[in-house]
Image (cartoon, rainbow, N blue to C red; front, side, top):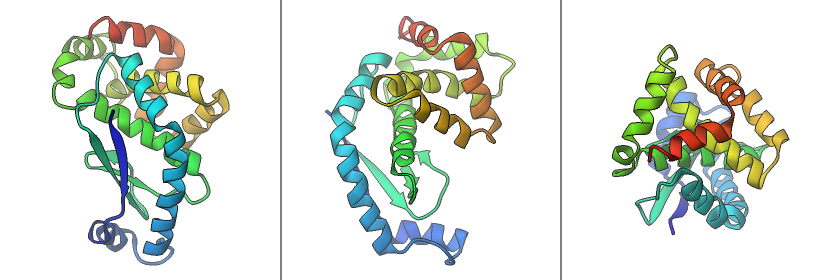
Amino acid sequence: MVKVIFRHSHSYDKLYKDIYGYKNYPTEKEIVSYIKNIQKIWAKLENKILKELENVSKLRFKEGKIICYVIGKAIPFSDPLTIPIYKEEPNYFIDTLIHELIHILFTQEGNLNKAKKLWRYIFRKYKNETFETKIHIPLHAVHTHIYTVFFSMERLEHDIIELFNLRAYRRSWEIVNKDGYQNIINEFTKRI
């Protein structure tokens, strides 16, 4: 089973500190302390969530470990997996981590080829949507499944509200809501 390893890289973090500025940027000590807290939370969920992601998507994580760089401020992304601290909301860190892990699961070597039919279907069915919206439709369907199994609809609503200003995300959530996350997952898995 894959493991997520949380890591702080002083030099990597310094790049972001230079971009965002030093004022109000979390200290290295704060980031390291935050990582310890997140590790405790994630340790209780990791195996169940990673297993469920594989089960629901019919895809497998290909690597034994995934390094997650935790930094002071940034826009989260999946390659290399990088997530900023959310001081007031550790749950939002976990939700963001799951989002990025789904990206990783979908795009790891071998999985992208395995899901070619799915992506052709998504790009045909939602041809008038942006690229960003299209790639987030199956992702948000799978993430909705995770919210319903492990968390709550309130937590899902919080995620949607947090990302409301990002048009592609908002639009993909609208499509998942309209078409039904389970229907999208069914279309996904029958093409894997």
